Image 1 (cartoon, rainbow, N blue to C red):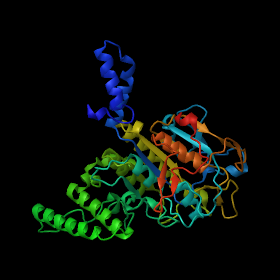
Image 2 (image 1 turned 60 degrees about the vertical axis):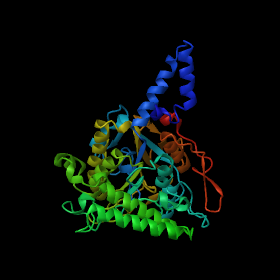
Image 3 (image 1 turned 90 degrees about the horizontal axis):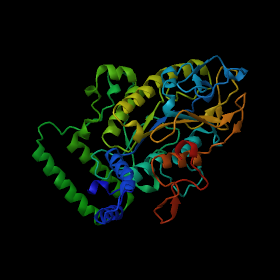
Image 4 (image 1 turned 60 degrees about the horizontal axis):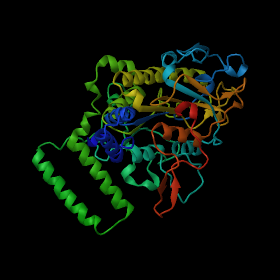
Length: 443
């Protein structure tokens, strides 16, 4: 009975149904609510952000301009939704369009990598040095993460960011900081497993000895914590608690990608991003609320989408990594009944200029670019907004970062107008004031 008592179905609701039953009154109208509550309880909500480090070119991915000189050599192809066309180098994603929604009218104002990254990962414009805003991952994990999960509720597979610590917890504190999975190589035979070192106890230490060591550690920590409330002490304690949980549970074996069929791993792609998407599915399957997977390195280029030169060769190579990984992730989630409860967000810090520069590249462009939402409750098969024939300006439905964040929160059943409190006790909105959810996608 208690499993039904969530935000959709309260104890008061249950009492009303029970009373109606005793009085002989039909409560069939409550049955859909009951069914929905049970369904949602069994499938925790989750969000996967596919972060495109460097800023992906909308003109060569999701908003092509084939009839204009700005369009470049790439061709459009049809998708599973009549009338929606995307790049020829994303054929597998073209078949997923029924569950995807393209926003072609992002207007964000920040054309610097660091500032654009901070804006798109926190929802707030840089400039307020007094406040370190939490990232979207920390906000989401705080709201919908499971406090008793043996895994962290926020995992980041992001090896490079233009803005240091921008994907951290900010004023929310270390409890909501991400577990960052890093590596020293992109070699498919080594780091493609994306394992975490030191989960195994030291050799010669049996479980009983390990448990005693943990008890001693907790005793020492509790004594120290009683004497100080500093942020560093809290951070130390939170990190140790998470580490102990992961060691004791062996992280629910989430990072053992070798448990997956070789054929499935091949479909994702034997590269860091492809295996990262597979790991994201395994983490979501184990109750992790938020996973960030960055496509930031192809052919040893750490800022993959920053295509100031040789744009078309590089975007084609990036698309050949993106397409199988993202499409297989959606297939895999769908087959496991998880796509309807998992929101996927594809974005970078800005787009790229429709005008092609003298070195065959595209430069920074925050004035009219594309993001994509998929899965979860998103009503797919849609395009929101439009840019002009040359791609240089928005001609329909400008969308701000605030609007995007409000849409993401609404899709995850989080109130975008709710507030958190800074360390000084100042109330700070979840989403900067003025953001409105895109109703046709989540309404």
